[in-house]
Image 1 (cartoon, rainbow, N blue to C red):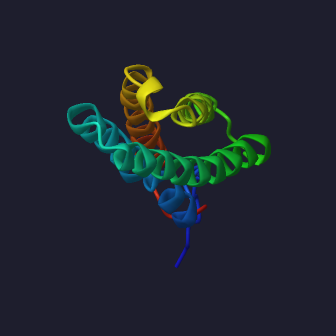
Image 2 (tube, one colour):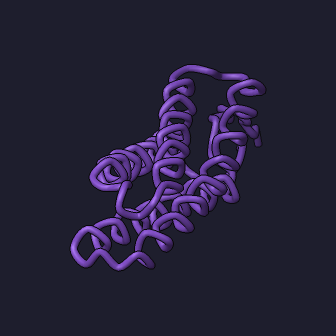
Image 3 (cartoon, rainbow, N blue to C red):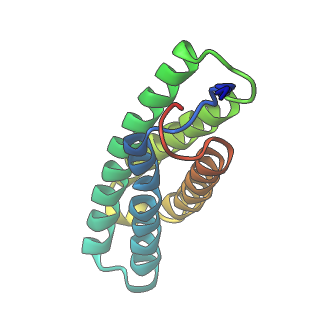
Length: 141
């Protein structure tokens, strides 16, 4: 009996990297929903909620970005992998600017915070989609 071991090593997302990446969507989305609630009610607490949710998204997004950069540096097959960290970095940078906008007075954050929140949520969805669809989950095989 002959055993053929022709496994191809594909670059896969580590499950912890997937959790960090997936956590950005609900946090940034919560920030967007809080911005929408603030825009409709002008209750200052909604602006505070949005600030904290955006910071949480930045923490998880920053960890996922560091992991993606490490994978980019140490990956044996780099084909198509450079777009994912670039979009993740754009998400983080725009999220950071959104956090700086939210640091202003609550009356001064509109409408720029709402616009940035929409863009950051869309970028977070795109980066998570690319991460899961292109690379899958399950570590290296």
